[in-house]
Amino acid sequence: MAYPGPHEPLITSPILRQASRILLDTVFPRICTACEAPMEGTGQHQGIAVWLCQACMADLEPIEPPYCSVCGESFGGPMTREFRCSNCDGRRMAFDFALSAFKAHGVLRELIHHFKYGRDLSLRGVLAEILKPAMNDPRLAGEDLSKWVLVPVPLHFLREMRREFNQSWELCRMLAGMTGIPAVQALRRTRLTSTQAKLHRQQRLDNLRGVFALRRAFPWRPQPDLNGRKILLVDDVLTTGATAHECAKILKRDAGAEKVVVITAARG
Image 1 (tube, rainbow, N blue to C red):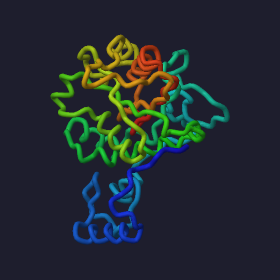
Image 2: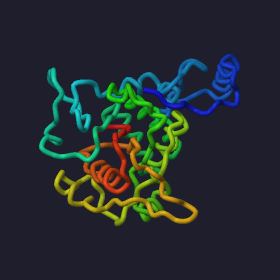
Image 3: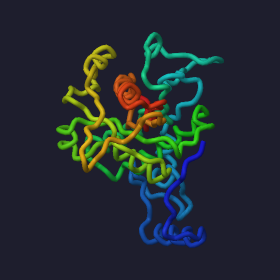
Image 4: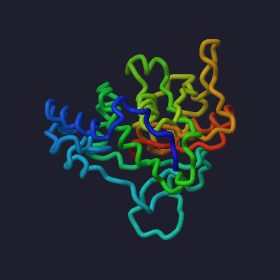
């Protein structure tokens, strides 16, 4: 797997960058984003450890093999071959496969809840770091991700106005900054739907049918050319995959995308 990486930092010397981190951590000691406990050490943290203390990191539940080859749901028993879970068995998904690094439990579930419904934009950084390990899946190992495109799952404009941001787009923006992979808003919701959280599988499918379309093009904002491109479809949580399926269907059928892989911060 390869991607361009973050933009060149203002301080290029590794020694000076380390010294600046230690100085900042000394003057402004870090606290855990989740529990607000003081963080141990200065200037040594990387990745998720920049944001979370050891106790909160230990609360994260990684998704490890065996898991469903389509939606990534983990399987508790032994499994020696590729399999589909009961949710995906018999269903034809428009996306190629979905990846999540962690389960939507405990600390991670609370972070996502505060991010989306508490309107805490400061959490987009830690959630992007939590999402990023999903891109280390072996099925992406041979891919040059610098040629892929990050696309967020859209919100209806009325819901986005009430929430004041689209959480999926914010995660896209953070990932773009971390990896250098370009991000575009290619999709839109054509109607306001009821929330998916309390709906059963078939209700979710019915609720979302025909909801998504390509984003309208204007003279000052042309439609991005996704024909033949490979796409990382970004969202905060994957549950049944109904939303991802409908988005991927539009990206392949109407935009001509070659491949759509779903990446989320958590698997519900």
